[in-house]
Length: 107
Length: 123
Image (cartoon, rainbow over the protein chains, first blue to last red):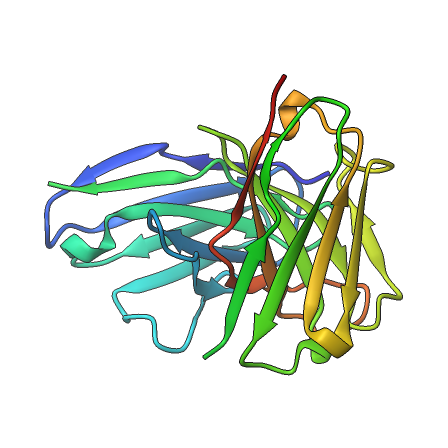
C-alpha cells in the first residue's frame, strides 16, 4: 500500500501569497497523483491531474509538479475563494490512497 | 449537468446493514468506472471500493473487504454499496465518485464527486 504524507496540515495565508502543499509517497508512483479542493457543503473539485496537468476550468494560479515520490500543489496569488481543504490522491495502485489533507485559511 | 447524488445513509446499530445508492446523471454512466470513498469525522479521506464499467473488475480496501459489496445498474444509472456487519469505525460521510480511467480494472483517480451520504453506526 502506498502511503501519502501530506504537509502542512494547516496553512494561513494572506491574499496574494504563494502557498505550497507537499505530498510525499512511500514508493515511486510515477506521476499518478491528482489534487482536489473541498469546500464545506460542496462536491470536491478536481484541480490537477497526473501531478501537473491543470484541469479544464481551473484558474491558472493553481499548478502542480513532481514525479516519483515528491509532489507539490502550488497556489500563486492566492485569493479568498481558495479557502478550502486540499488533498492529494495516488492512483498508481490499489488500494487508492489519499494524503491527510491541508486546510487553507485566508486571513 | 454532470451530477452524482448519494442516498440511503442513516443511523444503524453495530452489526447492522445499510445500502447506499448513488444516482448518476448528465453523462453516459456505463462508460465510466466508479468509486466509493468515505471520510470519518475529523479524519482524512479513505477510498473503499472501485467497480469497472461492466462490473468485471472490483476492488476493495482491506478495511471493508468481506463486509461491503459494490454493485451497479447501468440501465438505471445507479451505483450501490451494500454495507453489512457495520462497526463504529464505519461512521463516516460516504461519497460516490466517477473514475477518469477508460481502462477496465485500472483507476486514473476521480473527476466528479457527489455531496455524500452520512452513515452513523452507534448503539
